[in-house]
Amino acid sequence: MKIDNILIKIIQDSRGEETLKAIMRSGDIEVSSSVPRGKSTGEKEVFLRDTRTAVRKFELIKERLLGIGFKDLNDFDGFLLELDGTKNKNLLGGNLILVLSQAFCRLAAKTEGIELWQYLERYLSTKGKRKPPLFFFNLINGGKHAPFGPKIQEYMIVPQVDGPKVSLETAKIFFAGLKEYFKKEFGKNKFGDEGGLLFPGEDYENPLEIFEEIRDKLNLQNKVKFALDAAASSFYDENKEKYLLLEDKAVSKKELLEIYKKLISRFEILSIEDPFEEKDFESFGELAALKALKKTKTIVIGDDLTATNFELLEQAIKMKAVNGVIIKPTQVGTVSETLKTINLATENKIKIIVSHRSAETDDDFIADLAWASNAWGLKAGAPQPEERMVKYNRIIQISNAKS
Ligand code: PGA
Ligand code: ZN
Image 1 (cartoon, protein in one colour):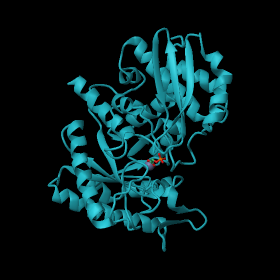
Image 2 (cartoon, helix red, strand yellow):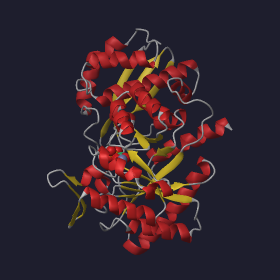
Image 3 (tube, rainbow, N blue to C red):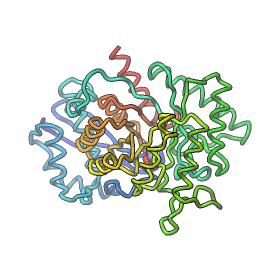
Image 4 (cartoon, rainbow, N blue to C red):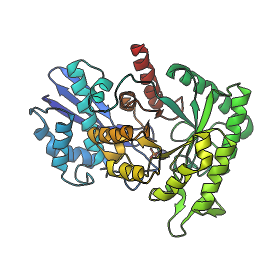
């Protein structure tokens, strides 16, 4: 495919900060794509350029991308990686490379007259009929996504119902009940970065107790499970080698493990993401190996631990550190590398959750990615802000078209 023109624009993300949007044209077909940005970013993530510099860097390489034929996505991404020439995408920046890579996929799909997920599917080893992913709705925002609240970053619900449409409806009902509860108990509703509620206080158990109360009140027993993203690197003190779970309570990794064990035995927790800091593969493995977790079938998920990186996921698999993995194209910086990591997960029966970032745009690329990779889950925040809803709705749309 030959690209005739590319524009890079600076747009605002949901946090009101600058991010990149690419508009790409071949003949009379034009597409666009934009990239999100995280806040609880792991150290292993690819280097990102500030947007102004990214635009300048782009102007320097633009002409080299136009008018030549690219065989496929690997060819295009490979060309960009060669132009960058660094291991960590330090020259062009992962955000610039990814926005081009995503736009290329959209352009190639549209040129061929196929859906984006159909295009992505070609590069994936997943075979057979796709099932819609479970939706992970982040309803209480803590950690770095909130000005106050528990250190655990995300309290999610995962509807266990038939199909994505009912899942979204269930989440909306649950969230309405939760908002009403919060308003009554804590006053005016306040929201965090991913559209979930802000919880006043650092108690890490109480949000789960409230979830249970809402679930029972709405008669949703058996219809929703809960999930946590501790994002534990964000409250880990490297010098003390302790986790600052509460203001006046620093806990060791052993103590933290016991705390998780208790939470899991007490609440219906389907999965727990980044329970320990991002270098501690061993503790992840210890948690995953607990009998108690095997009993409840709770999945241990790597996010900052694995950073959508092939080698890191390989290491996690070898060390039996996780049985699920977060996939975020922004962590690695190209679509083709993302797909390679997904294949590694699939081949090793590691569950895949495709995820948004805390600052998002209206791009629904990750929904097609989740569908194509037959992901176990899609994590896209609360069922309310528009930039989150487009992702859930895109899955519903694909799913409807398929049935
Ligand atoms: P981030 O958080 O997008 O701010 O990195 C999301 C997550 O940790 O899953
Ligand atoms: Zn996470």
